[in-house]
Image (cartoon, rainbow, N blue to C red; front, side):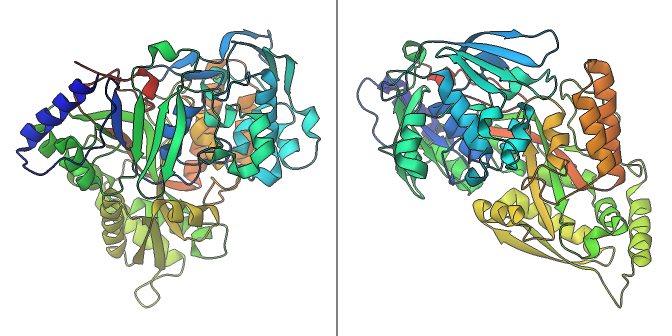
Length: 533
């Protein structure tokens, strides 16, 4: 299986017209290897402590939950072979397959129970603990108000897991494929503590094993022979590289040094289609690029008039059509079109005004809030130091300058920027939210007052929280969708965040790679990939 990869390198080099030497690790004879560009350096491979998509890409190849992503990202049974749901939707029973951790120890229902108690343990400080609040007493356990044993997760026997929910969740099978619901090897975590995720200690139940992690260079994984479906896993070895320089990553794919990169510079799509036909894979995403306003600290951003002025003054049409140019859609709501179990309708009240009208209104709002030419609003815009995000930040900076706002841009490495967001060390932050599962709750739940760190701007609204709680307890799907739409409209009227555009997935994939299926959730598990002969 080595020859097809060599062929792919030659094809890519010919397309590039490039005489540079291709720097690609040798693939063992008879094996299939992938060189995988993955944006940023992971901070952790612990499923209960991770935060970013770039971490999840790797973790989901090492550990598998009750369900997993099918090639089209729909939920497919994984550790669970079958499920049963009570009539009221509150009790889910999962029957587990015979499976082993990579060290040969059986995976049991107790490993799931242990994982859920661990993610809710305040000492774990998981940013995703709030997702497990769906389990009975989950929030109370996380807040130290209930014992872990009261959590709605029980191992009825080694192969039967029973989950009791706080409220019906039509998206439970979607949620179960998220890393926050992954099992962890109790016997290894208890032995090594947080060091269990280090090479040499890491134990998973997925299609791949962790081999090595060289900071700033690559993470290497190899096919797990104990994975229950190992016979159908084609790729033997994967190297995941941090690739923050997207132009450099594009050229590495073009030369054949990388087979895949999980992003490309948005405004280079036309160029790539000309010089690398068939490589660029844009696809509309379940994701929103937005600005968070830090209302945690006292300051001008606590004033809704200021937040509205800053949001109104952004020329979303220019940003999408002239700057990004990869099919992004201007966003005047937070939940993307095409989200399941939802109805479109929520929108900023001012969305239909012309851009000049919005600029005039923004200036008037700032004047009402006490800001003018003699006393201008001064704002720091903190963002990651990727090319696309810098272009966006500069465009927003220019739009704000046009209404008299003095904005400075602070660039940070991705992990540093998100650490600042979590710690509320910012005024305005630029980020994107990708759906954890296909339901509006993955977007709207982000802004609940009790979510914690990922509600970066600390948006708080009792009315909003009450509507989300009402939706949680509404069994009728159409009525639930209407309640969620009312909640989103409440948040938009509060100017809780400033959506900028709906994201386009921008992957670069060598045409020799098979099994890559474009999907809105942008999940592509390596177990489905292979290399065409």
